[in-house]
Amino acid sequence: MSAPASHRLAVIAGDGIGPEVVQEALKVLDAVEQVYRPGIVVERLPYGADHYLATGVTLPPDEMRRLGSDVDAILVGALGDPRVPGNEHARDILLGMRFQLDLYVNERPARLFDERLTPLKGKTTRDIDLVVFRENTEGLYVSVGGTFKQGTPDEIAIAEELNTRKGVERIVRHAFEWARANGKTRVTMADKANAIAAHGLWRRVFDAVGREYGDIERDTRYIDAMAMDLVRTPESFQVIVTGNLFGDIISDLASMLVGGLGMAPSANRHPGRVTMFEPVHGSAPPLAGKDVANPMAAILTLSMLLETIGAREAAAAVDGAVRAAVAANVGTPDIGGTHGTRAVGDWIARRVATRE
Ligand SMILES: NC(=O)c1ccc[n+]([C@@H]2O[C@H](COP(=O)([O-])OP(=O)(O)OC[C@H]3O[C@@H](n4cnc5c(N)ncnc54)[C@H](O)[C@@H]3O)[C@@H](O)[C@H]2O)c1
Image (cartoon, rainbow, N blue to C red; front, side, top):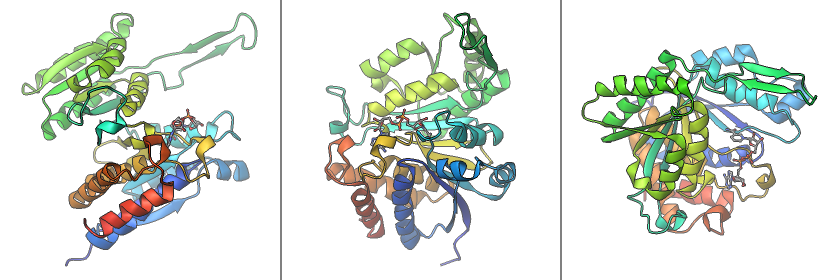
């Protein structure tokens, strides 16, 4: 066998349940290395609330540059800690990576592994299999705006929503490219163009870019109607593309259709550059330290990472092991199971190691 390629993976386990779910993902990665040898070299970084509270440092600029140029992938657990009420460390680290590394694609799949996991009556695993592509660097998250006369009865708070043609075009194109590469036949774009005139840009760009993909149907919804239809007819969605805020909200809704945040992986991408992988969920402080957090979102995130570096067989094995765990009812309480975080990780790692 030839020597394995080396891929550098930086890990920021973060806060709350972040370290617990990351530990299980890395346990599964150990099993993957034994069997498939993708050659992933893990480097653990200390950033998070503890580090910030002890040193005042969130993520140093030199480190951000190094992450952008010297590593192949980043895995983040979750960031957010009640001891940092303003969440400034999380904003610096997470939004910092998305914005400064220009990771403009937030890919959030929602696939139903077992009918038992969906709250929707009568929907099957065939009905719920979609991906949300959320624009990740613009929209309402750019911190343009501010407050005036704060704390007085005349207080004004303004947040500007930024939409650039370049920014909209690259995420829309990515969604169509992904659809084509993955055999999908429809892309749905969500906006609020009926009430927010600036969203006309999304409609025009979606139409213009979509015309280049004649084999793929173009579908548009207002975001409120999409929220309704995701519950009513989830089978009508294959690929969704939308802005930063709508994508944030709609992907949480989509995760609930497949078992909740504990089942929702994601990737933050800029093709050709470093990719940052993270479960969609936050740090869930009330669950931390209790061995109850669902590690499947983090483990499915590992599967996305393996796929991205070209370790397809390993990615499929990890994905299959999570499906098998769900089928065997080896899960945490959030998906109706009785197992702990570590026991679920052990089971999935063993399944991968034994190539079942
Ligand atoms: N990407 C991130 O790091 C990220 C994302 C969202 C929120 N946050 C931060 O996390 C903190 C908590 O935020 P929140 O409570 O709004 O969102 P959260 O995702 O932490 O929790 C929301 C709900 O989902 C449940 N949940 C989440 N992950 C789970 C898992 N793996 N297993 C079982 N149940 C799970 C929680 O118990 C809770 O009921 C805040 O500081 C917030 O800013 C961080």
